[in-house]
Image (tube, rainbow, N blue to C red; front, side, top):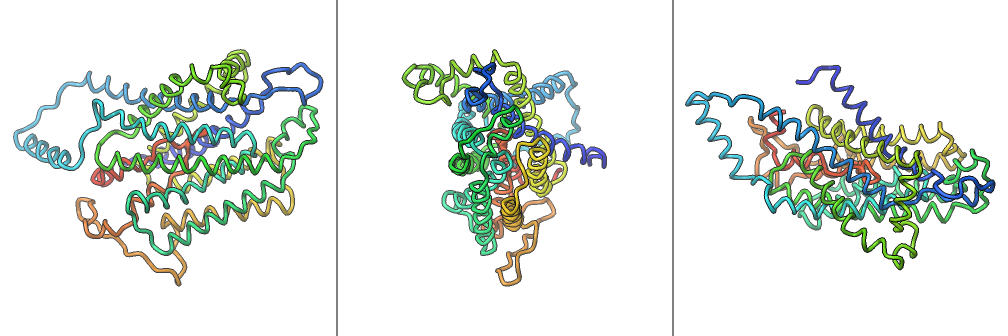
Length: 436
């Protein structure tokens, strides 16, 4: 059992690293990389390279291999334990019981993680594009629509059953997303608030851009939800440590981008959009100190966010992670207000607060963190056996596994910040949660 001091450190670490991830990404988007000496700020070229930012995220995920390698090296230095005959027989019996249900993910089967990595790559790139056009708070709140798509896809592809109160909660989340998007469409020039601090006076309204950005972020959640569903399919059959899975997804995602670089570097492709002009983006990255070091900060924050998130799930609960992620969204909003990136505008900000309240209520209601209204059908309470395993018949009607998956933020860090569902491991190894 972790100490009382260790748990607050984990929760604070998750909030700080998750918040800094989105804030660093937005700050990186606002960095001038070309024509910075021009007295007219309208001629300044900002860093708009969503593909390179996605690569930063995958490099951060690859850093999750470091604690795995460290643990492996320490294990090699230890002497092999000596078992008494009775202990040895019991250990073999228990290990055989686990292997009957879950096969270890190794060999060529590791390539299965390339599928969710591809979904992560697409979703993260789309979210990075959306972040270019939206205030960071609206961006983070819009990502809360993930629970809506995860719930729907889980019913379609995982044959899950949702209770009436969960469908109502998904509709509540949808209403919150609409309010947040509408509040963003009413705010003009929010996206260029940082330019005003530099003396710029952009006259182009940001209404259309904010709506386009919200659409990109919403569309990205479809791929992120698909990633979670594919991961759950894989983890339902194979056993793999969460940090190892995160590292592999980072590796496969980075390899995919590297393999696509020759195509994206072709003049016909690079000239079609500055978002995919990788040679230009590389030049901007290595020749702009603020962009380079912020990229390193983003990669480190993503790896730490995954570590803290998995640790919170292991030592506290998935519920604590869901509550902590709500605090993360609030902290991003408060920091962006404090930095002057956004402004409190009456009554527009009230719509944003109301929309965020709907998002939080719908997410908490879906995950069973609060009791549904009395007029909605109450779900059956699952009873666990002494070993911590749910009865098979009740599990077929239960939505607990879906709740764990849908509770994820997405936390991915990332722009695609929440990479691998931390409770997928708990879902795949129900016995291991009892051991924690």
